[in-house]
Length: 489
Ligand code: ADQ
Image (cartoon, rainbow, N blue to C red):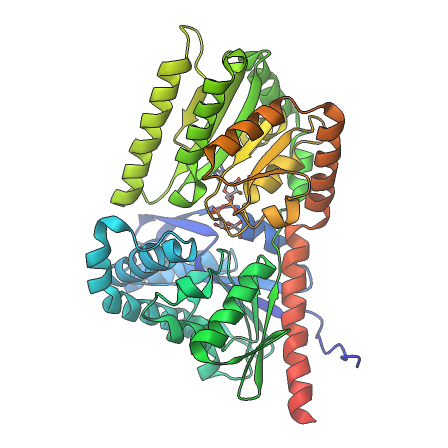
């Protein structure tokens, strides 16, 4: 049957995410410097014109005093942002502890970090309590800002309890939840002491979204196996109430990248890089320095490639740009050391007095330099051990209209399901396979490169972030309207 369109002209969309898209630095008692960060989610939501968007999230700073809280709230209001204030000890247990030490590694199949697994298990309950408390704080702020008819879109593993908190307060609120990481096999989710509570809490939402069909399927299996609920082709049913579960693969604001490579500023960067690397082929890795990105595995594969292909040694360079994250965590510090050690070894083995095979940078690049690198690269190497989607692979493709370079992509990144036909898919744990894919990519005939690039370019430029956000929000709206009609019948 046809669902009547009950959508009013300009409803508000409340986007709730752990971090606001703005970072705040305190300049004085009542003055703040705000810096907007243009991440994937921000540009995705810029494309939604049907709704008036407001953000609710943590500003990333501890503001214990009322004067500060009031002035920051006022400053952020001009950017359509509403802050959630969290005390330091809650942030420590909720964000560093439960979110990043437990959910992040488990959702990426890494298990509990080995170094402090005893402490993690002993502190589990206090971290979980802090997680629930933090989610409740987010819910309080949503409630204060909610107006009848608003659509509320909760994001990511930080806020799995939020749908429950929101629906308890207002069962009629339209609530959606989207996970940016993978949802693991139910066998992994089972490990979590809070496995049932988490699933039940998130099921309070009207619509649950994942990047891929596999993640959605894992989630439905977890609900059937752990909670004993019924999985249907469209979601999970609990005592007659249906929560819709579906795949909504994210994209990028491809126009922004396609246009950027035409800018004189970017063209100058490209020229500079081309002069610097001369006739050498350029391979590129751009990642946050995180365990899930498989940077050591990538380097080992490149080393094997150089070992097996002496003729390529002075003809190729790998640029690895790794932006540091969570630098205070020992596990991440260890990863940095490990990466530096491997880079040093490879450069020592295969470098010459005038050149080295790997340029490794521990930093982020500005947007224009990044686009220039994407545009002049011959082969991009994405070797995530697990990755919800991986937007770097999309950004690379969007910037390659003229070069038509090759994408080597991990089969464990969500992007493998959308760019798989154009990319060379690899298992990042198999360094021999990755090394031979590098050789294949560098030698690939131009007609094959063009065909593969065309496939990916069409995908990236049509499945954009704006389309992703628009589809999710309108499905959420329709899901609720449909459910209301069903209960009236
Ligand atoms: P991330 O794990 O951060 O995102 P990704 O999707 O690749 O991974 O996005 C990273 C973003 O940061 C890209 O826009 C990229 O340009 C930028 N970036 C990364 N390294 C950089 C560097 N060195 N310099 C400059 N910019 C850099 C999470 C999930 C992903 C999922 C996204 C979106 O882990 O799987 O695709 O959310 O849902």
